[in-house]
Image (cartoon, rainbow, N blue to C red; front, side, top):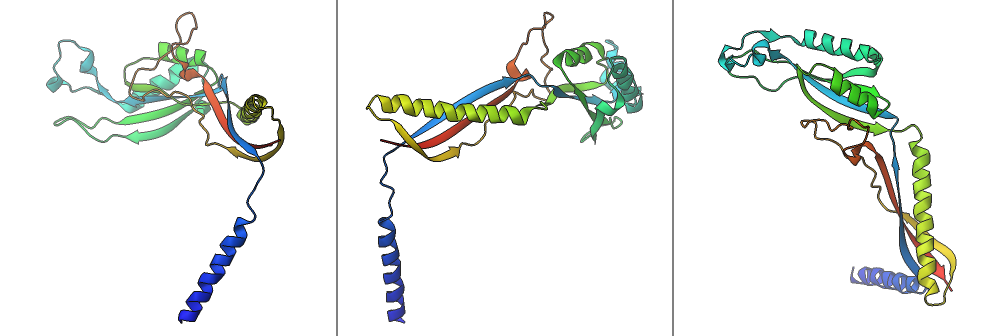
Length: 234
């Protein structure tokens, strides 16, 4: 048994020793290049949360304990869909994401909540919706997602730009010591960092100003890529 353990240990030692003779002795430099792109989306999802409410809420003299006239979800939903239709948004652009609620006021009827996802193609339409529809029964609005049909092509462009940036960096660093790039040894794509700034679903929706200007940069899809490249130099 002792002899077997010795043989295994000896074999491993030989493998490690032989592996050390295959070290890469080339001169190389590691650099990281990055590139960014901001894109105007051509598909925007707007999230609207509805909740049943009490008619008496809008009577400044009424007290909560006396609220008794509940406005049903069917009526709120019907009004919303009619208003969206007037804005040119058809029913196939509106889907229900969630329905229900998780609590109710003591001594009061259960108030149903419903969440809708509305698809539009620009922020002008988002602004129209927010400024036109009745706010009664609306619990919140938020931006759900931003998309673009050519996003794959844009990703390629940004990745290529990051690789070129890495090459440029290596060239000017090496030129300071009178060296030049000879070949590429490896290319590693760093984890993606692509995002848009999403609004809190329970906050007010930030909208373009009256002049069409943007109050926040969250209306852009931002692509950012990094490439870590190892260049051989001579």
